[in-house]
Image 1 (cartoon, rainbow, N blue to C red):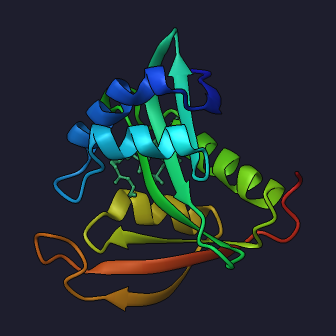
Image 2: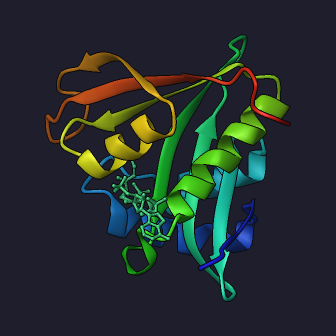
Length: 153
Ligand SMILES: CC(C)(COP(=O)(O)OP(=O)(O)OC[C@H]1O[C@@H](n2cnc3c(N)ncnc32)[C@H](O)[C@@H]1OP(=O)(O)O)[C@@H](O)C(=O)NCCC(=O)NCCS
């Protein structure tokens, strides 16, 4: 299964909002927020497209004055998971982060999200902390980071 990873456009926002709906129990990005992120162009918003359909996305947010990019959301349609699309979105987000002058990606992930934590560990992320009651429903977050040195631009 070979998905194309490309920058998101405004036309992708409904599909991205649907991915948020089906992938996260809470703390979702609304269609309105997604539209703003894509339109403003400061965030790295990527989508994975398969046979003309958006089946995954990754959103990473810069912070003014920081060389650390925050990976805010990665989601893949459950129908096409475990085919490498999440890993491809992660790799492309890292490439864009390096290209835009960042030297680190950091993220928070729900402590009970074993599949995602496994992916991040396999991709070279290390755990750097834990935030209790980070999510709306009281779940804790694990904080992870990856240095980007050596990632080819
Ligand atoms: C986390 C998530 C993005 C991973 O997406 P994905 O497309 O399934 O990721 P991949 O296919 O690259 O990797 C998933 C697994 O499939 C395996 N895999 C990848 N390609 C494969 C292939 N061709 N054949 C068999 N297995 C494969 C990977 O090794 C990995 O195994 P693991 O679970 O033991 O680590 C997805 O599960 C998801 O959207 N979850 C809900 C949202 C979420 O939790 N997001 C992350 C927090 S922000």
